[in-house]
Amino acid sequence: MFLVSGGFRELIEPVAKELNISSEDIFANQLRFDKTSGEYAGFDESQPTSESGGKPRVIAMVKEKYSIDEVVMIGDGNSARPPPPSLSTTPSHNKVTHHQI
Image (tube, rainbow, N blue to C red; front, side, top):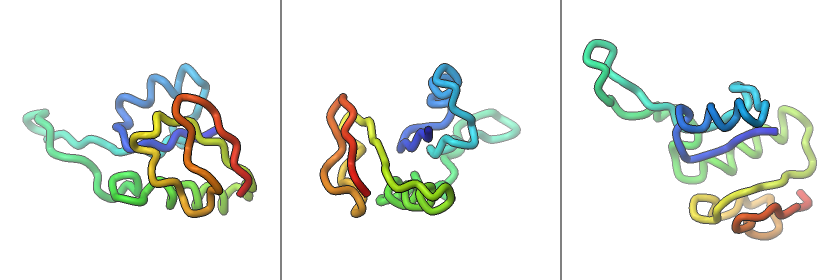
């Protein structure tokens, strides 16, 4: 199981821990803080989820790396749109939708 989010890793990691999802299986934006002052210093723009279309790129990468043929997406529908081109329909709104890849 993977968590792919346009949200921030710092908020997602506690949820992943409760779901027994490894931190290596989280794809989300990473906040940056100034090492001296501790103040917010932006986010890691190298994360694919920090860009438009980043989620479909992550899904494609995971599918290839792990030889996955089917994907289940759970989302609120707000940031889950547009769906990755490999999915046949849009992600669900607060329910699980199974898509053949």
